[in-house]
Length: 163
Image 1 (cartoon, rainbow, N blue to C red):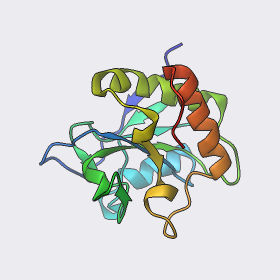
Image 2: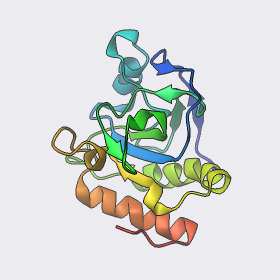
Image 3: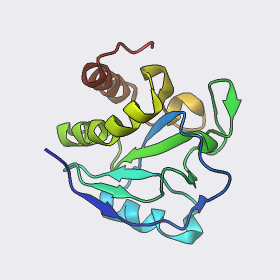
Image 4: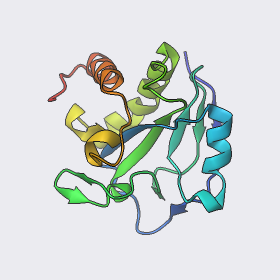
């Protein structure tokens, strides 16, 4: 079942150079869906994701895939820095330390990933979370929720996560 997708353009992005789309960094917003949308569309916040997923699976597109969303900050992945340039940012509304991801959030994320996975030839090794690319600075996702998401990705795309 397709989940609803709405557009809530954020001004917090860079249009050039084009985004490399080498993988995805998963986040949690801490805020609920509506509060997160308000923050992510406020120019003063200087933060955005490509997509935000509500607890019911509704997705909000904030930044086009070809643009650079401002989600990772100081970070390192694939032996590179400036993860915003090459990792799409997908966030789950809420705080994964206080409430687990809903089945709808995971299913919606998999639905969002599917066309991108096929187009870019991603593997689980191209998926990460904010905690792993900015250790000591960020803690999202909760490790148990990251593990659940990785299992779901492996099952959906017929692959085993490398970590």
